[in-house]
Image (tube, helix red, strand yellow):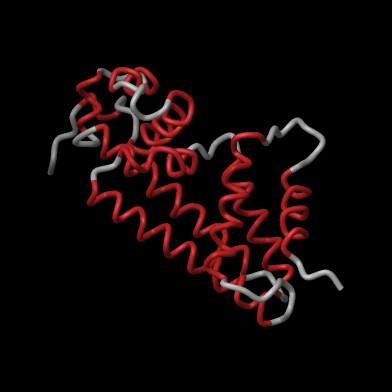
Length: 196
């Protein structure tokens, strides 16, 4: 039977460290966030960080991986409740926005703005995860095109434009403003719908 180190009971969890790192990377940026900042955020010694991760870069990768995994899972789950392409578009947009703009979800901000800081092998893995998510979105867009809900065109390009627009909202959206997330989702979708 393995003996437990007494420090293990008080050592912050890997999850707590990833959440704190995501918030710091969003607030300060990856390059300006030090190992000491990360350790201080979870109340540990700087060297203890490496009990969970081999480097600061590995922490960034885990932040991004969790962000895209959480987003993909949330959108996929919510799409199961939809009955038509218009509803899918609104649900997909609303879920993406809620995940991106929630106070607790800083991982996606890191994914959007810090991915160049990853080593190339980890960047490739994150790009694969992003591409899988874009495939889900592209399928929704294609169904909407097939049903005449949105204008015919290249669904891949439309998804990238859609993602660019909604991801940029992280720079200007304020939760205490007149426009809520659900209303924003409706407005975004209304911009791409075919008008009768």
